[in-house]
Image (cartoon, rainbow, N blue to C red):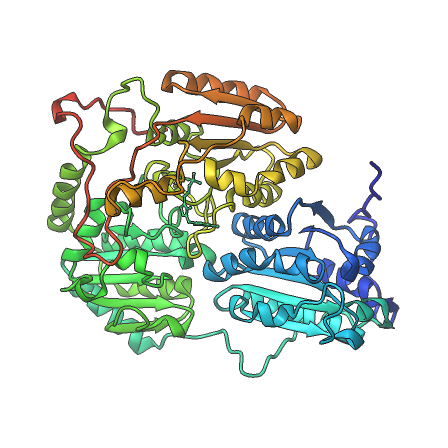
Length: 593
Ligand SMILES: Cc1ncc(C[n+]2csc(CCOP(=O)(O)OP(=O)(O)O)c2C)c(N)n1
């Protein structure tokens, strides 16, 4: 296998203004100018000119096994790094294979620039070979998209695409470039960094009066709760949130995507809210007299039934996207601004407080839930997914970058792996895309420091959706830890069947390959774990083993995630884990990792 080496960044010289370049060269010039160092993609006819030009540029290309994987890799890279991810594919099937990954990025507000090849401009609309109207197909799942037919447009549009993807509420932007525009030549115009898009104003500022009003509402509240969302992480505001919380003494509930935006081991951290949130968070929200929603969007998985949501609370909502206000929940005060800027303005305005009565009440709620907590139960020879995740949290010192798939294991991860830092949990929230974890972890691997451990936590169902990317891992020589939480079911759907469809397990029992042999077939290592006592040794072995290790954790097959607020039910109306031990049998496991 001989791949052309890429040009080293140290020797690369950007083209001076006026140099005649092909459109294909302009694509890479424009990407280098945006400081892109890695792209994830798959070649094909309509994007071949761009691929042919690529080796002259200091950008690493990761050849995926399916374009959906490329999209998720760019997504994982963006989430782990805070930069904009880049993905490249050909027209027609290459581009349509991206759609799930684009939609995933759209719903979670992830900045990614997608570059697709398109048939030559004179063939547009003729049903030419591998022609798909990709801008049409992706219209509703991109923040913005472009069809480029002329070589002169390539540089300015790619620059604008990065600006749109990153500014305001981030999101995916697609640039579809006709093959003849890639082949044509024109004088190069380097990026100007002076982008003005008519009608697009991503910057909003809350007024001083609104900030004063928010501070007064916060000072007056006796039972306030902060709802910390993904906006805290995307805007890099974790430190400001901490300063605000420590001054006001207000406890913090997090959305799934907000986990890590506030340290999970902080005394004022309540954990995750919503459908599989901690019981005490949901009850605290229902009893609160003020909700301060920061960079979150009152998703239905978070609110439960809207008509009974936080019935006595006044609500302050801070978000950079004005379309989020009063969409699901009517609020008393909306602050349209960057959440970090608002926190920076609020900290000097609010009173220093301790809220002992309110925290005492939350402590009582917690005490009640703890006796139902599986993590606190003794090892009875069964391997529970919650135990696996709790033990991985301890063995990794809580410091790993964890990339989860979608299903029960995702919720257990959110409950039992305590993230103290932003960008350490990468998960598909809004779209809930099975198959996300393995490719997203590959992307994250490129963004993380060499000594960061990157862990995949996936179900046996979701893993099988994109397991072809094991070959990408092998070809790229990457070190990942892949934990398959193997329960032999599409577990989350099985759980719903158990709770709401009288236990009729239709199309949820699931077989799979021998995951140990599958890893070995790729030149990787596989380890099977069937008992909790084997887990620590397995992790130690994996650390000593070069290359990626795939763990097949054979967990309890019919376990369920508790608590659970049934879809559309009142947030306080939770199904709790049945008591399976008396409280006296509880064994304390060490809290610190
Ligand atoms: C692409 C896709 N198809 C279907 C679903 C619906 N769905 C949500 S969770 C789930 C089961 C996941 O099973 P598994 O990956 O084994 O994880 P577990 O729930 O057992 O932890 C399914 C089918 C989905 N979220 N994404």
